[in-house]
Length: 44
Picture (cartoon, rainbow, N blue to C red):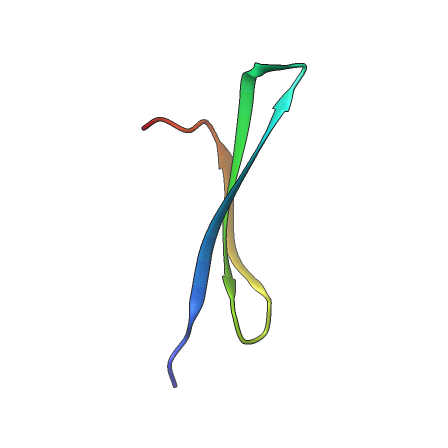
């Protein structure tokens, strides 16, 4: 049985755009269940 999942990211800010917060999450495309997530700063 193969597990097919997708990774996505979202960002938001608190107070000002200089204080950006990122959310990364992985979800199962078949069931829609979230497999993992994390919040943090993004550095390129």
